[in-house]
Image 1 (spheres, one colour):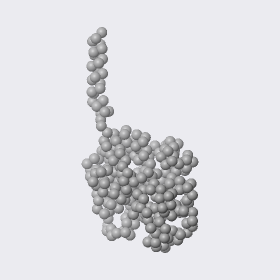
Image 2: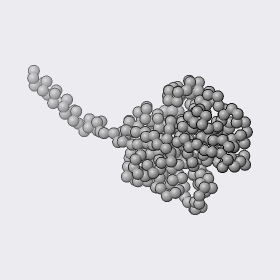
Image 3: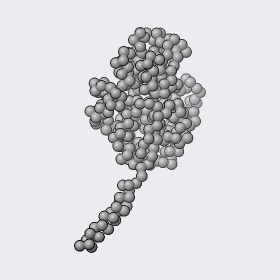
Image 4: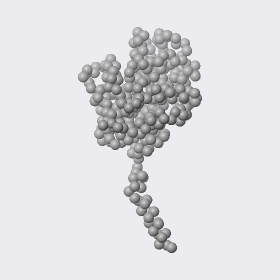
Length: 316
């Protein structure tokens, strides 16, 4: 009776040490992603993390909160592996940092200028303060275009740099500012607190929004890890498209909004998502033209130098 039992014990022990079992127990590769604040534009990353897409790709992700302005240098220093602000990343790449866009989430930027009720004309903001994530961020660039549109002197307005959309909402809610540049669901949350959507400003400029920025060294030296990260986030985007109810609930829980508000926010998110994960060269060139208003950039700068979509699923 002891021999069969011994044989079974040996067989079970061998199966535990088989190459297949060893592969299953393989340690997850670690990645760190810098995020400035809680924002709808980062939903593909939240879903990739919370619904297990990153883990299934063999990755253990850590989201680190840090101001948008320091993310490029944090990437170069190796403190993080990715950050989502494409406008910040491209601006840094043009300045000489070896950064590259490997994934683009969105086709539009539905940024909204939200103000106090007493702001009725653009001129009413003169002498007041406006909350934006930071200088040369998308919100700030859109406000600069807005002032130009109405032929107002931007220097007559003070900016409060909040570090992210959630910070801009908090500054508005606490009445530290007369207006703030927000995206959904913060614009709707502000309305419920008695503020008003003054004007959609996201259509004033064609600015790259969110995706994945990394370094050229990361793409070269850790190509498989970058590819896994991209694939996991692309799967998360597909999940968002296919799971309205679950995504809306996740939005409601994460942003502390009502089911009605979260359904509207889901529709906004769905309208933002692009189809193939690429950033059109036309948008990249347009953004370079925008940056040329701030600093000298040679006319022959090729935007393809800071774009690499070779690791997208199905890319050749």
